[in-house]
Length: 87
Image (cartoon, rainbow, N blue to C red; front, side, top):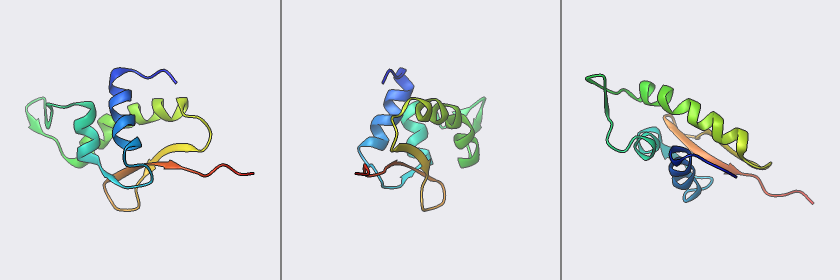
């Protein structure tokens, strides 16, 4: 699976916590390490989510069956869900 630098950083963060919730702020920091401010404004969680959404979509399109980045079970989180293979 070929991923860009940002996609690799995001996937690595979520893969290390597979099937566990990861805060959107942590996901955002993985992609944009020095940026909690954008255009002079402190970013809200909603704005962070908007900025990382396209990266998540691109990764999901490249992931094999059984793996997906999905919203977490707790608000303001994501997780890499890995479904067991069916026999």
